Each structure stands twice: as structure tokens, then as C-alpha cells.
Length: 432
Image (cartoon, rainbow, N blue to C red):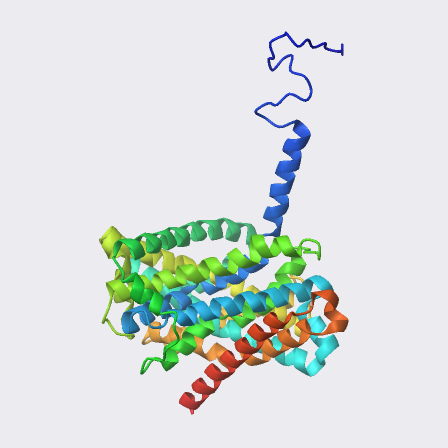
């Protein structure tokens, strides 16, 4: 190729521009660098968004709507506190996964002993069993509101469909994208409704100050169970390991994934509570699902009920397989059966979790909304152990080195453990 010559008096055009001339488009290498940087950022998104998707599920929606309906803005502080603690514990789990390069159950065996590891793995599995009940009931509730019919039969149909989709994972990914779009539509609707319904923002701001309204004990326990999902935080270490996160990428991962992945569902849950407090004020914490679905009517009329039902179904259905997969994977890892999701022991565990959710729904499905609340509340009985394990590992100098907990992370860790212990004691006393 012949070398071009340039003269100061020659008008500059794209054809004769000198190599250092400014143009609208960056050089090809720069474009590749910009694109590569964006792709690297996208690659970091994952572990915390997995955790966040579990937070914003049917249990969190039901508890938030009942909290707003029965107690106004008074319980917003529960969601704020749980969200802050979720950030701390998900970050601990991700850091442990980064420095160890191994599964959290394997690391727990090494540093805490086989007994603690088995108790943690079995405990996390039991939590996913409780969540499976909420997912089964939630999917059935959504479809029942849309098409009529029995909640129980719809729950069984959804469970069977998820079990079938398990054998065709590509199909599930396509279905999951559609369901996430539905949930996103509902989330946007809640944002708009929260502002158009005219809430008392000053009173809502006062809701961040802790208070304990009479009769709200079980609901607060359920809110902690859904919004402070210790099992999801524990599993974040698995997700980070699968993504191959490194020490060098940790800080950017925190900004791109951990913070937005945890905070966004928390903000959405707060808006759900505010919307319910404004629209259903005085409806009581025992509102029926039909009452819950009415929170979107101010913006969309009767169509609002359809949007809510679709979104509620989407949140439940999309969580069914993810929740079951996490529980089965950890259980198989605990007993050294397998670590691959496609392995037979893991698949059998997934089917077992799904079957448990469906069975409990059939046996105790007379009040599905209350069943979701009770199932979520029961998860707090196991969370103290998972919290203590995460805090202990995150402070182990031999394991963590320079990535061990700072003092403020330990402060949040202690607060988190004390919160789940307090809610566990409260629930145990009420059950007794």
C-alpha cells in the first residue's frame, strides 16, 4: 500500500485524515478494548444477582404486602436491615470462594470439621425445602388468580412442569427469560404505583426507625427469613467459584455485581411494602391473595391484577428450579456424592426438593398465603449456624490472608448472627 502524504493546507476528510486526527469513531483496537472491558464487566455479574433473585421471590412479595397492609410503613426497617446484612454476608461468601478456589462445604470441612460441614450442608438443604413450599404455592396462586381453579392443582402442575424442564435445560433457559421479563414488568409497575398512589413519604421515612408493632412477630420473622437469605448468601460462594472470580477482580465485582445485585431487590421490596401500605391500608396482615393482587389497580385497573398474578407466578416459577438446584448441589457436595449438576445424585435431590414442596402444599394448602409466611419463617431456625460459619471462615487468617474481614464487616457479621438468633428464639418459643 502506498504511503499517503499530508499538507497543512489540505482540507481534512475521513479519507486523508492523519493518523492522530480526532474522529467520531475510536480506532479499531480501541473499540475492541472498550467492548472487551464491557464484556469483562458483564462477566462479573452473577453471584450476587443470583442471591438477589432469591430475595425478590413469592415469600418476600407476600410478606412485604402483608406488612404494608397490616402495619403501614412501620416495618420498612426490617427490609433495610436485612439488605445491609445480606451485603455483608454475600461479600464474605464470595471472598471465601475467591481465596479458597473450592466449595464452601469443602472449606468448612477443612477449617471447621466434618460435623460442622455436614450440619451446614444439611441445614442449607432444609432451608431450600422450606423455600420450595413457597415457590410451589406461589406459582399455583398466580395461575389460580389468572385462570381460576384450585391453587393446589396449579401448584402440582407447575411442579411437574419444572421437573420435566429439568430434563431439557435449554428449554428452561428460554422459559426463564420470559418469566424474568414478566417479573420485571411487575417490578416496574410497583415502582410507578408507589409514586402515583401518593404515599406519605415522610411517614415512610420514619419506617426505617426500628419498632415492634403488636402482633407482628411471626411476620417479622418471615421478613427476616426472606430478605436475609443466609442460604443464598452461603451459595454465593459457589456461584463466584463457578464464575472464576479472582482477587484482582474482587473490587470491580463488588461494584458491578455485589452491591447492585443485593440492593436492587431490597429497594423493590420496600416499594412493594410502601405500595401496599398506601393502597391496602387497614386491610390487615391476613389479607387474602385477591386483596394482595389489588395493589396494582391504581395504575392499571383490572389489568393490574393480571400483571400482579403473572409477576407473582413468574417470581415463584423461576425460583423453583434454581432453589432446588442449589439445595441438591450442596447436599451432594456435603456427602461427597457429586459436584456436577448433571450428576444423578444431584438430579434426584432436585426432584426430591420439588416433591417436598408439592406434598406440603397438598397437605396444608387450606390457607396458601399463610403457608408461605410460615414456610419462610421456619428457615430462620437453621440460619444461625450458617452465619457463624461464614463469619468464622472470613476471619481465618490462614485461609483469608489480606482478604479477611475488617472490623466493620465483623460488626455487621455479629449483628446478622444476633438477628437470626433472636428471630429463631422468638419462633421456637411461639412454636412451643
